[in-house]
Length: 157
Image 1 (spheres, rainbow, N blue to C red):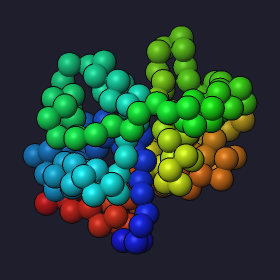
Image 2: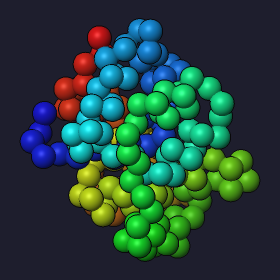
Image 3: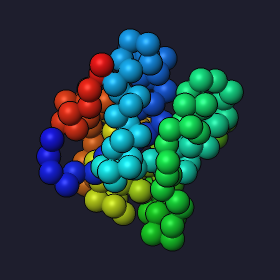
Image 4: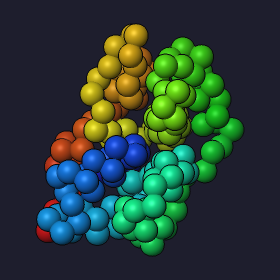
């Protein structure tokens, strides 16, 4: 674990592990460690991530509501960076499919807090920007879920 490092989780760092490779019955430690790391202020999640999770009535929503004690609010600093992101990479949010709404807020929250973005998204391109692509442009560190598990010493069991 890198001392003092803070991680800002994207919605995909919750949805994909829950549904694919760290399901609660297979890797219960992941789901115990996330709230612990939030309490320790080592993990932050934007209120926009909570809102994306809330859009689907499922077990992940129930887990998040019961286990995540705090969500990072939409501050003026975050809003300013979100405006910059949307002005330069507006395609990051797919408004037609109503997807990826939290993405600019995740990046902006990480930028404001000096945190590392954790996402399950692929890199992206100029025409199809994704979180890692925009993070690179804004000098915001970014890593995938596997790297987060290793670096933050998240236990799976």
